[in-house]
Amino acid sequence: RRDRDAAEAMVAEFTATFDEPDDPPLISAAGILDASRRGANVVLVDARTPEEQSVSIIPGAISANRFQASVRPRLKEAPDPKPLVVPYCANGYRSGLFCRDLVREHGVKNVRNSQGIILWTFDGAHLVLPPGDFDLGEPCGLAPKETPARQVHVYTRAWDYAADGYMTVFFVKQPGKFTLWWKVVWGKMLSLCTGGARDME
Image 1 (cartoon, rainbow, N blue to C red):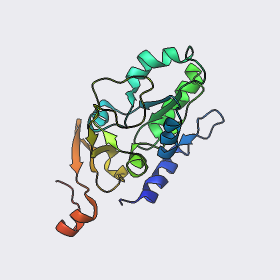
Image 2: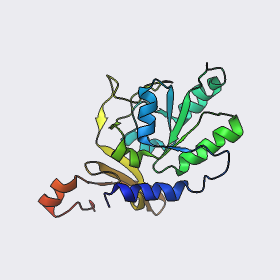
Image 3: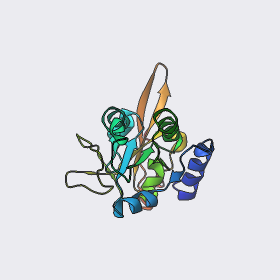
Image 4: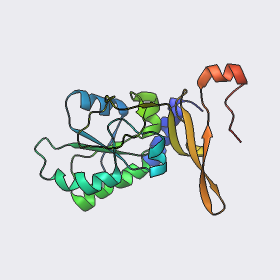
């Protein structure tokens, strides 16, 4: 299941609902990185839960709460070209809802929906641990104080499609609460040594 095609198919399934004329189109990890390298002011917005964000984030991202409180109110006054706002989640569904709200309720125009952090593990540069502070217009690349991460939260076991080499985390529903479970996915080396990655149960 550590297969990019399977991960892309999952993203396509969960983003297919965003087919209204005003729904922002998807943008790939390569598209985000290319826009940043060309000097675009890319604002990556992490639309996931704090539990997911605590595991790792895409470099340069800010939380949705921070975006709504201090960035979105300033977008209309931002000089042209306007910042490119790219929300992301695990697979594009929650970020698609976030995009729709930005466009319909707040009139934000320059918006794209990311394919999500799971596909980023295949196509993006890397992931990092969340820094203590986020800012508008941080580049999509490794900043001096950022710490690379080899873990990613995939939200649920059913979405455990992250690339080989990443330790994955997901929520498991238990009576009355959610807990975090870890799954080690170290690729071919682990498969050869142990006969395959196993759930830590």
